[in-house]
Every structure is written in C-alpha cells, then in structure tokens.
Length: 226
Image (cartoon, rainbow, N blue to C red):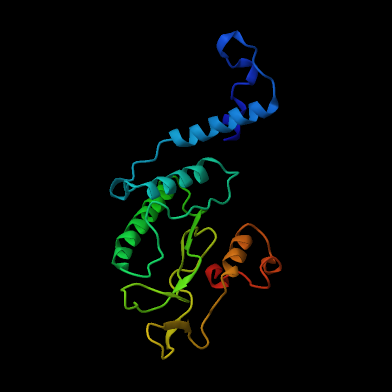
C-alpha cells in the first residue's frame, strides 16, 4: 500500500471547477490520499471462494472489507467490528431466532477464513469472537436467556501465532436453587482466565512480553500458545 499511495496525485495536479487555483494545503493532500486508499480497498477483488463465498448480508460485507484491509495494508494491525446486520443479541425472550443469527455469523466467518487462505494470510491473521456479557445456561419462562456468566471466546486462524486447537478449559453447571438461574463455573483444577486475558493475549501476539502489566495482572491465555 505504501508504494501505491506514493503515486497519488498531488493537490496542484488536481483540476478544479471554475478555473480556480489548486490548493497546496497538506491537510487536503492527506485527505485525498486517504479517500483514494479507501477506494482502492473497496474496489479490490475478492478471490473466487467457490462454495465458501460470502453470504449476501451487510455483516458479511463488513467482514469482507475487514479482511481486504488486513490483507492489503500491512500497517493495519487490528480491525474491530460489531455484529450489526445480524440483529440484536439481547435475547430475554423468544430466542429461537438465535440459531439463524448464529448460522449467519459463522457463515461469514467461514468465508473470511477461506478468503484469508486464498490470499495466503491464514497463518498470520487471527479472528477473535466474543461478547461483552454473559447469559444463563437455561431458558427463562419467556423462552429467552437472562444475564449470567456463560460466555464464548472463539479464535480462528493464526497458526503462525497459536498452536493449540480445541477447547480451553472445562466448566460444570452450578444449580443455584433459583428458578431460571443455572450457571456455569470452572471445573475444579481446570484452566480458566478472566476477560482481560483476551487483551493480554493480543498484546503478547504483538510482541509485548509482560502484558499483565497492562491488564491488571491478568496474563495471556497461555494454552493457546502451547
């Protein structure tokens, strides 16, 4: 991308309407280069993914754009996106639509991994999927999930960083005795970690050897590296 941006037109080369003189304001130059860079990403062609082609929805469009950005601009290290386009996840009632949303989520992620592999980048890009709060194990009386401690953390790709495959840690169901309140808790002796360890894991990937200093003494998820 650096070589491409060096060839962009300078402000004085840009034709203006009405015969006005072109500006030489460096802020204008940077803005123009930025827009051209964005256009080059948007216009880049996704490889033929065959049966793994991206689904036709706005969330998949965002995932596809993120992969293009990571593949074509080495200066981009992290892209964070929400799941807008799939619908909300605050399923206190009628959670049956959860299955459809989850299928659409992982359909897009499957395409993203196929995209990275087609570009030869699957070893060096990680896709991490997690939410900001948890749920109970059981459905409530409205066929939904109330807030609890059940949470997922998925890591896809990046074999160049991570060596572990499978499930990290084990949990068991804790019956609180209250209606609609079944929780999961770590099994005795199993590996467990706090949410800040996700941040520590990212920091370690990028070369910080003691990330726990930045994450309140929560270290990286070491099993992912072994």
